Length: 404
Image (cartoon, rainbow, N blue to C red; front, side, top):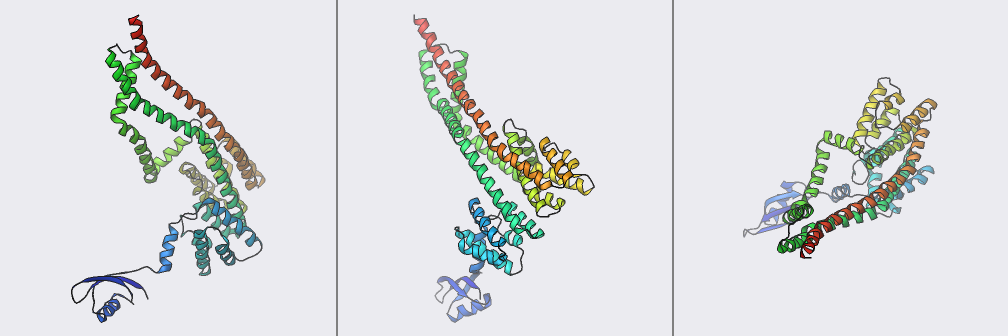
């Protein structure tokens, strides 16, 4: 019997509110009349289970907790424990209470006849697309253990990659933020004070000094705009990426061609492709379906479009290597390994070699990029400070020369 939240009035005309169980609104009205109340409005309250499920759908799960989940499922499934019993064990053993509740809900859904991946799709915030699709591939081929093994490896790789990026970017980011803040402070507050001093001395200002004073006046007058424009630009680009597929495609193309960062972005996207494609091929997913799965996993609309076209070409009879060669996004090394894998029938192993190469190359590339950026940022800071110092001291030195 559902619960209703109601508002009613008594014989004195006073409004009261409360909650009551009833079959429907007519039954609720009848019960209230027996208590001397007249119904004004009523709203059915969600059942506790439904409310909990809605709350769970909004919960995110950290990657390290997903790694723990995959790590726990592998030995249980490998020992022959049924999926339902494995999920029940996970609902008792996992450290994250949200994930424990999710395991209980997944167990209930699977017992009711739902597919495992289908049940996971109901919680998109908790389980990323890559996980749901690889689980679906494992269900399709009967290789859930392989799917969990690959997911554990994939999530662990993402954790290592994130740690490498974080470690490499801490110092350059601090230097960059300090540089920007110092320049803003210099032009917004320090330069205007020197401007007043120089104008008071009545000296003729050289061109560098006039440029610095002009920039300082602009910063002092319009600093809210100067600070807000970059933020607004970032928000607008992020919104456009979600709204316009064409803009997102062009953005990805530009991202792959950026100096220093372009090749790194391409490496990361291609590694996601080779890891997932090798996994699906290994567990027996047909190539065309594996390519379609991978479109949702690479994290790049530009690469996803290429994969869609490759799948279309293969369905029309084009060989895998030839289809890959039609797209400039793939570097020669990847094309060679795809060709070797196709000719030997060991495509998964060939793709694993690509992934292993990039696993070593990506951290080196990250370190190299930020080792270049650090001195570049410092040089920019030195150049700005030097130019400002020169612009300040030139008129002062001119004044001293005139006095002597």
